[in-house]
Amino acid sequence: MERKILAATLYIKDGIPISSPQDLTPAGDLKFLAKAYNDGGIDKIFVFDLSNEDQEHEKNLHTIRELNRLIEIPTCGGGNIKRLEDVKKLLYAGCKQVLINSSKPYCFELVDEAASRFGHDKILVSVKNIDFIFKHREVIKEKIHEMLVMNASMLDAIENLTDTQYVALCQGDHLDELVNVLQREHSRGIYGEFLNGIEVNVMELKSALSAHGIKMDNFEPSLKWEDLKLNSDGMVPVIAQDYRTGEVLMLAYMNKEAFEKTITTGKMTYYSRSRGELWLKGMTSGHIQYVKSLTADCDKDTILAKVSQIGAACHTGKYSCFHNEIVHKEYMERNPLKVFEEEYAVILDRKEHPKEGSYTNYLFDKGIDKILKKLGEEAAEIIIAAKNPDPEEIKYEAADFLYHLMVLMVEKGLTWKDVTREVSQR
Image (cartoon, rainbow, N blue to C red; front, side, top):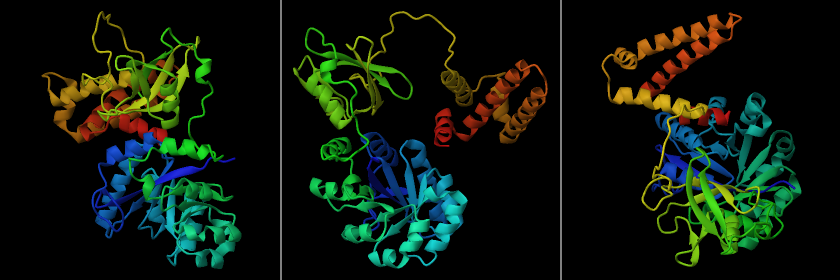
């Protein structure tokens, strides 16, 4: 059985998220919303460009591109799509799919052209009335991969007319209504205003839906609490680690209730031994830890939790609780990404704090044309080295090229995080 999805909608006007097409008040900070959706359990975001003119359109595309750099879940871009170029721009901005308005006279022509160019699975259509499906059901069957149904009263008729999958609008969060929609044969998932707010616990909702036999993308533990070996207090120590960087954040403890609450809600919940009560990490500070994975060690007496940390893990305000150095021995960093980050940090420091006689500062002083010239020269050196049977030469030239690339990145305000996020979306 295919997993069903819960989708959020995000409306972009003049480069910022707004509440709805009818309510132009700001919906909140883009980075905060992106992280909340990405880590909170939302499976997909429908993002709509509400621009009225080309300048605003480009501004909104920039915001959509930034959104896709911040998240790991797929987005489907819609709004202001009139030609193939608009489809291309949304896909190039990082959207996995594009939503075309079925009420437009050019809908099928554009669907056909876009599907031929980018693939059938990239193109969806939004549908507001049953007449469209009744009149075009044969064309829908041939050309439409999936629909966004914007009127839930149509679902019975849709099920009788087409076997095309759809994501349907739900007006409220009443569990019986959601179950009814998701249990339908061709339902792919649901969306609705109630899923747009950060107040709803999406993982908890998924657990409730799973209890009704609906397959969701939520945690299904391979080990139960009874499979773990408890300490003398009847608890298990938990090490929390940043899932992106691998940095160890903190050590805490779980009892059975905390363990089960963590799995149900997707938020790290511990047992406070000092207070003798359950402790949702970040409940008062807002520094929540969203669960990415839980893994038991070989003896099953310790849990490693990889988490997405909001704010700081430590009560002192430090990102990690492990900041009191006892001893330290110098070593050469071998982790490739850390090597790049450290070298990048040195180059950035040179730009912010120039050092006399520094070659890096010489490049910054000469400006972008000099940096580009050197980058081009180093690229050519790699090509020449590649003709040499000795691969060692390529290694040296590649290192020179990457150094000059980092100078360019600093000059343009790009980081390795920006680049690796882009690579991960390919």
